[in-house]
Image 1 (spheres, one colour):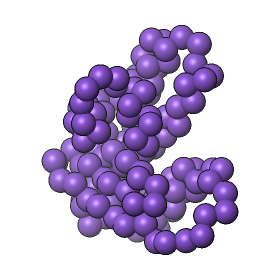
Image 2 (tube, one colour; image 1 turned 60 degrees about the vertical axis):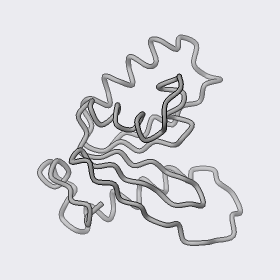
Image 3 (cartoon, one colour; image 1 turned 60 degrees about the horizontal axis):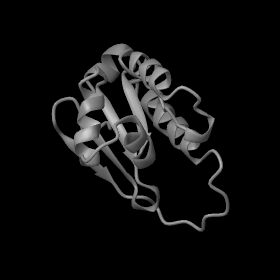
Image 4 (cartoon, helix red, strand yellow; image 1 turned 30 degrees about the vertical axis):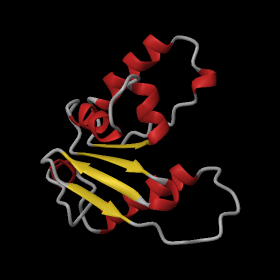
Length: 128
């Protein structure tokens, strides 16, 4: 699983950073991105869904786009979309929220026996 967690203010060479991320994402089974990550990776007039499709074309079985208080959308390489609502909570601090989200996804996949190559590459909408 890769979460690019892009911080544009720290990127000195945008082209090199994008190239490294594309190489890394081509090796991942799952990629978690935010709207901001997709906008930075693929600038230009395009929908976030079409940008997620570009990421899917790199190889992963699924791209998970977090949507803050609106939950998350999973895009499978089969073309299926999975929408999951967020549980409402009082937000105290969002530091490491993405890391916690990733940990929850990975823990769930581990707990269901799907955190293996075959489980990820054949991930179903129900599992995602």
